Figure (cartoon, rainbow, N blue to C red):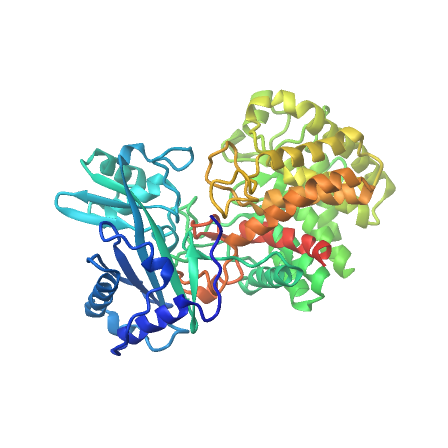
Length: 605
């Protein structure tokens, strides 16, 4: 199966135009497209017509009758009678979008046997399969596109949604409790497949997984994505220099799903990652507004710094949410040095040197970098020094050491600091690299997953390799090895479970796909490392899979065409969402993808 492509003037365009005329009170002879008409089955083909308009809750009605035309006309007639129909501007295709979906297949299933991260005849694939359930004389449909329009990804989320459809959601319950209730009921269920089309302006777009086909992977298309996504970061900054951290466009909420009781939650590490992305955009396009936005974000960052004097001199570190993370200082330092190098502005050098001394102080004799300097659950939040092996394990992070080494590399490369300090940076960084490559895999072997996640360290080694002679063949082998392991855990065209899976990652084959900008950055680091060393065999091994990953990741980019279910589409266009159907937008998802595409662009050109 291949992804559908929208072509101007298709049968679907005429079809949507006919439905719009009928909804507006006109009379036409319906022209049902072949992809609907040929798949119609009077035994299962439920039709739904849904209206979407910014600022309004979607309005939907369904019908199933003996013919395709009668079913569709029944859905349209029912929709026109619904309360609130008059509020939709049916006559304006740029305001009101129309989704038409028809069930094409229904296979009986046991609700308790549903899976979504394992291969099974009862696999629920969000956006591709739906569910029909009957209980106590009531029938409820969860259409495949509901995964997109209601941000559903897992079986638990599906059952929670179904509980609310049956009116069985009780106040105060969480989604696990509601899902458990649904599994306890004697439901008769079937897994569904469907065909769907959405209006867009005066045309129509066939959908797969509830999403229009993404951009082609061309230099021009990727440049549009880079400009839009980096622009989105700049356009969604607070007055104080913070970014829009999280947004759920279906619920129109900024309350982060991981911190529901703290709606103002913010992450200073991801803040600095977004700063780096703005600078990446400035270096690529020379737009002064991006550099100005980066400076505003850094001005906020320095307000989080705590300062102290040590034996080596002035030190500082970010302290936010009652924590001081190694990665927060590392990626903050990287952001300051990327800014200084891009602009020539040294106003933040004092803080950069302070963070360098702080980071150097977090490297132990054997080269291990301690994940936190302060943590509210350890030593009552006091600075953590001389900690034992158990505490080191509890503070372990795959990401933080690479971020710290990247910051140190950029400082070493771009700062005209004292030679004594730079010599210490060189020696300590080499010691840390050796620990990470030779000792960490054995000391913390049980914490490693089959799909690598240490793209920051891959970037740090790439950076150091072009700066100083501390990178060894073993360090480079780590980068190439992690890239190869990522590629081994990537869905390819010949084994992908679904046509939009190629280029996405999995921990174990059968997992719901992970299209991941961060891991794409790791592949890019491996490719650039090989390129700067002239290692053509490694370049060739990485390039094809990296381009496949780039194409797959585009399916998570929020376009004007794909944001039809968002309460405020103008707020999300240009961002990246978490997953294919999970609609959450978070600053790091945007930042990682934007940086990857910005670095890919020169090679595409």
